[in-house]
Image 1 (cartoon, one colour):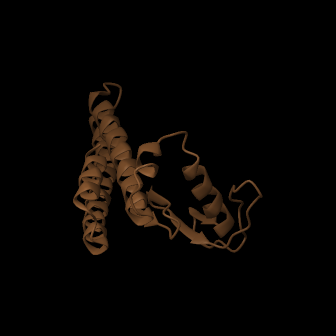
Image 2: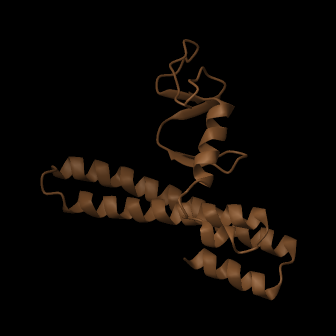
Image 3: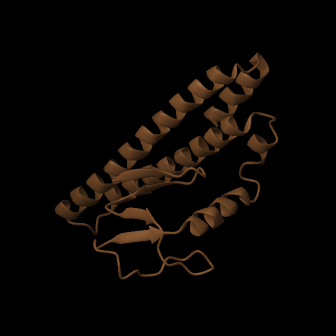
Length: 159
């Protein structure tokens, strides 16, 4: 399990998958098989695909409007968006774990395996969230934000 953050702020949590730059890619950003891929399960994404994904994140149908209209520095906004995304992913994964635990159709062995996988994802997301919060604290300190801006940051981080 790994967490990958690109320079464009795109973050993904991957399970047993490698992502590398530079493969053949369609104009729509979809990855295509590459004969040079030696490892099974390797996914290659071009920089164009990453840029398109970044643009998709920007057109988030108002998901980040409050953060974007806050007047906070761009770096702080980027981290706040990352924190919001991580919290959403964490909530979804916790709900998934609860469903696994309540699924009577699973054998005990299958339930344990799925629960362990889900718990590993929850642990990875929790670690990423802690790292993002530390990064936010460092950036806000380094930028020497006003008290009003610090209150905004805290409010957004708690949402």
